[in-house]
Amino acid sequence: MELTKKGHACVRIAKDGRTLVIDPGAFSEEDAALGADAVLITHEHPDHFDEGRLRVALDADPALEVWTLRSVAEQLTAAFPGRVHTVGHGDTFRAAGFDLEVHGELHAVIHADLPRVTNIGFVVDGAVFHPGDALTVPGRAVSTLLLPVHAPWSKFSEVVDYVREVRPERALAVHDGLLGEFGHVVYGRNLGPQGPGLGGAGYARLVPGETTTV
Image 1 (cartoon, rainbow, N blue to C red):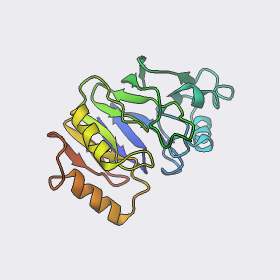
Image 2: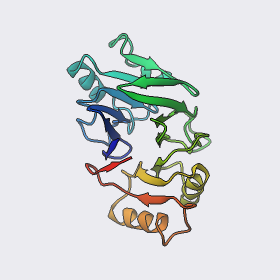
Image 3: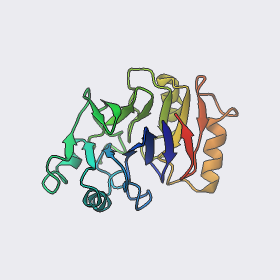
Image 4: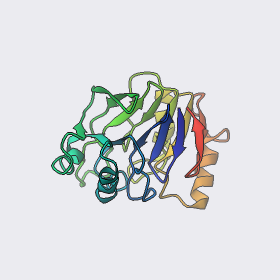
């Protein structure tokens, strides 16, 4: 599979001429979902789910389908009957030639006084895990963890311990759109060989538009 990093929390994964897009939100490119065969949405927050842009993509391609949790599906199902599928923790399904597993139920806690929304993560072809906005441990081996490196709900020590617990071969940065130039340097250093260590996992940050094999 070829994985292309898009803005913030969004990635495009291609295999055998078909494309899967995860979390094309408002902090990603405006056309991030266009041309996809399937779209996965982890939760309802606008940096992961931009309803207007996703509707444009669905209108542009009648074959495009979406898999997501109930809170997002309810906003789309009426306009796109049969094309928006509700999934939850423990579900498995196949979309655009990819085998998918769903892990997780809740968004990480931002603050006790703020409502906690639902959140799911997706394992793609048994190899790549996108947890959305949670430090969900998938309970199975994955070679590539898409790692939320920076968010209002996390701190650096939790990010490190999360990678150590999942134990991937490598962690690729996502959810990094709030970091500026200096922030990327600091996180890159601390998650790399100069930091406390990720339990043997390698770490890399792809700039938007950059592609790697997973």
